[in-house]
Length: 192
Image (cartoon, rainbow, N blue to C red; front, top):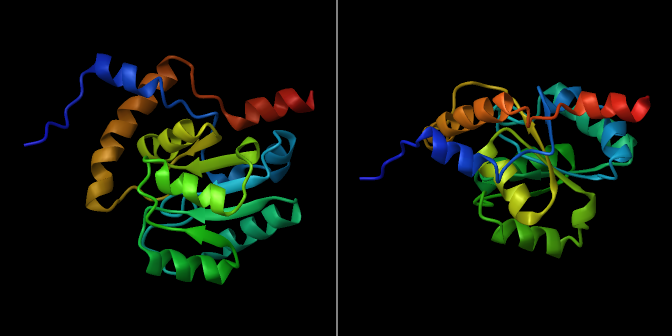
């Protein structure tokens, strides 16, 4: 039987490897100009609970508006998901964006292959996601910037629930150590 319990010391050790570059309550609050100023014009966005509810089959109007706003600002949004091809393909085609699925995050191999096959420059990539132990971890392994957002929906698929418990503990530790940098603080410093 697998033991999923973690000691506080072990959590502190693990989470220090996976500190997001920035945090936001939601991807919908981030001004596209922030990414441009940071030199991050390639936005790789997790689908489930980052961009939309994990149960939605097609994009909500606010998702369409957001991606239109990103594109108008000169950003290149991509959907990057661990979910099945059927769901991701239908969703991304509706939005007219490039996508990839079954990435097996946090393992970087498939993500690296996607980045290489699309000739994406890692210096210009930001990964936006709602989980430390998938999205933020793979960003760290790939050596790219990341934004950690709050999950849109609290209910999850069963295999995500295990990560959520670990994620919640890691977020708490990172917050206690003042290692979570809100994008708005950086944005404000840039504007001043």
